[in-house]
Amino acid sequence: VAPPAALDSLTITDVVVPVDDGVAPFELGVACELFGLDRSDQGLPTYDFALARVHDRPVRTTAGFSVTADAGLDRIDTADLVILVAGSWTERAPHPALVARLHNAHDRGAHLMAICRGAFVLAATGLLDGQPATTHWRWTDEMQARFPRVDVRPEVLYVDNGDLSTSAGTAAGIDLGLHLLHRAHGTRIATEVARRMVVPPHRAGGQAQYIHRPIPHAGHQSPVQDVLDWACTRLHTALSVDDLAARARMTPRTFARHFVATLGTTPHQWLTAQRIQLGRELLETTTLTVTAIAHRCGYGSPDAFRAAFAGHTGTKPSSYRTTFAGPTR
DNA sequence: CGAAACATCCGCCACT
DNA sequence: GTAGTGGCGGATGTTT
Image (cartoon, rainbow, N blue to C red; front, side):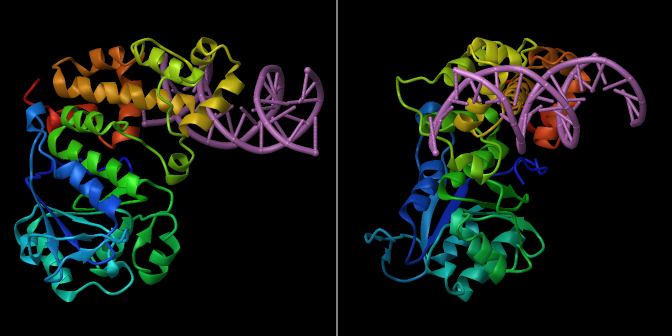
């Protein structure tokens, strides 16, 4: 469940996406955008990236055009990240050769990531039995019915079980991908990729919150947006929800309502998320003590910071630093 | 760590 | 009648 307790570092160098007839172009696009582009000019990592075909012919996408995958299924044998997207296998049982290779990859320690209905393939391998998982809300009931041993969670954006992960609607695949990039390379890389893709670095919370999120209008800032920008520059102070409301020239009650309607999260939850994000960055990129970082993130005591940090990330600040402290530090 | 003090948030309702 | 505002109480969660 996001955010996950599993924070072990992840190695990603070699990424493969098996494709079948019925592949969804957007899901495929998300995989390509996250792992298939060369952004080395910005100091971002590059990956060996390939599509692997299940047939010896181009596969037909749901949008009607065809895609030719260069690699065969054996490409899965060398990958450390396998991304599963929708295909004909989400209705029928996946090809046994694919299932066998996925089992193999999993046994080898590769990470298997599913976007949207790609979770059905993962469920069909049996690897998700007894584990939490998610998929698009339109298919959560069907997934639970077809795979009763999987613990389907309709309310979350993505689930990371450490070596297997699943995401809700396609866009949640972006969140999951960024989360995996974060595990592999740390906050700086993950937020930089997010910036390149022009998506917010991390969204917490369930699908319902996402669905109601409006598309921000360029050059047309809401009063709430203005307060967010302002608040981000003063995270080191003891900002309260009432302070935000005052800045927005609204009563706390009205402000809270607008806030939830715009962002799908409450003011205090958002504020805490920003503080923790700042805390992560400081833990990774500086050698400041936890007490100093707590103070810089607007917490009156290191205990309060530790509690909030643990609630959001599932780890203590000190262990987080040990796992993720980057070379830039 | 736990208890006491404090803040947040949500349903409800009256009001414009 | 509809849409938005804001005050209040108390359950819930956070900070000291």
